[in-house]
Image 1 (tube, rainbow, N blue to C red):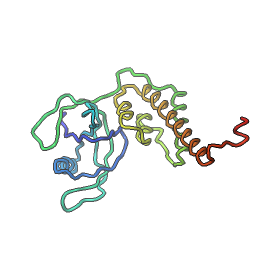
Image 2 (cartoon, rainbow, N blue to C red):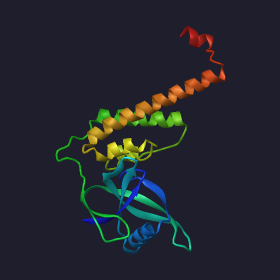
Image 3 (cartoon, one colour):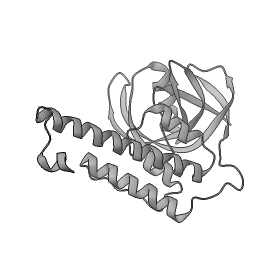
Image 4 (cartoon, rainbow, N blue to C red):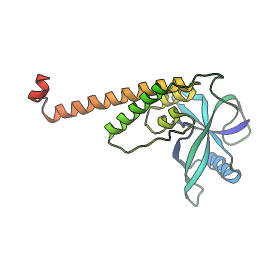
Length: 207
């Protein structure tokens, strides 16, 4: 399958929705074709390390604004993972032959207790962030569902994207959530100490 590519300094996980501002002529053409045909394009991470070979197909689910010069604000949703087989030519935008990047055959599903630990870690982080955030427990991939809602660094999201086992993704995601929660706890503690000129209460000192 040949698709148009949209290299960006971001990672889109399956099921995740993100807004995009389209302003370059080549991408106006790409998105315009997708809108006209209902087709999808490939969003792939590109940064100072180059363009990755694994990405996610994206569909435009909402057009927020169109400007007279063709620029537009849209919302896209991640669909399926793919791997670039080879780059192709002939269009104003980058194109490539791709194949689906699916989980390995026979890959183990995460045990119930590992899923529960992941959900506890997610809820603890959300509580620490003082935000309201729910997840769809019926999603095909819980890891992608949660990973798409937390602002992880792109290399970490890319790591999750390329994993080919839901059990491995859930385990790794749990580690990331627990690490993020610990970082927030330490930052909050540092802020409290700074506000108190580095002093602790008698209760904290004795405990």
